[in-house]
Image 1 (cartoon, one colour):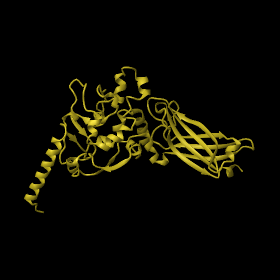
Image 2 (spheres, rainbow, N blue to C red):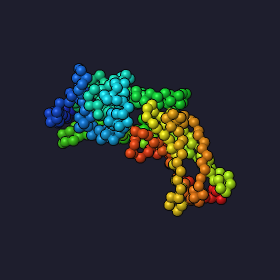
Image 3 (cartoon, rainbow, N blue to C red):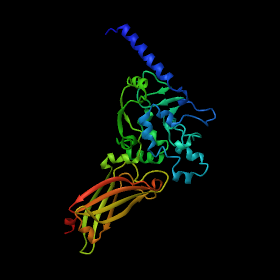
Length: 341
């Protein structure tokens, strides 16, 4: 196949022209990969967000963004925060597998450079497709496609995962907790940058909205079965079996008070007539991967007259005070009254 030298030359001139306009119209980009020799100054997340608009917006709503400002962390880490705590709540570079505390912009918690800046380059999981890279970039980094990405700080959970994964293929952290999106790495914000970015390839990648809530995308992660127990007219009860099909403990995590609760909501013609909540497990006595727990729950007479039962398995956490609990599993059972009569 022969290429038209004139066409190729024109394309190069156009790219150079728009690239020059784009770069000259913005502040220099060297600051995005620069950290002062003393380690007291470096990039801010908002600076990365100028081009990586969607990623920045997603990150802002995560626990990673609030890892340092969390009230629970502030109370536990002391003032000033201990360096060993900052290695995960305000890390400098996790890509090397050896965490260091960051001593600038600490309020940003686990920020862009924590996961992406290493050895003077911004790293990512995909090939480099941009016509112009305004700062040093390292693509195709396998670090982002393995549990190592999370294990740097979530070591206890990784140990549980490794035990569950022994000899079998199971999902890694990213598959359960990070939604997939189809998009370009950057997003233009003016005429010239939009034209330049339009040459980039779109990749099937992971969102930066990394939250525990995303595990509900896998409804089989925790299963609940129920059976009515007729122990006499005045002693109705439910036998409930909860199976932890996750590749780690329930709840999991190194620090903080966490509790798994089962909420039973009884409805009669759409109106709630009874409610009961029981504790299933907590951080001191978790439900291990593959473990089954059986509960026998006594019910009130009003509960047995309900026609619908909603079962919500909820994760409550002290550090998430004021926010709704995470619903790990939701089940609806019809014809409750028939089971007791």
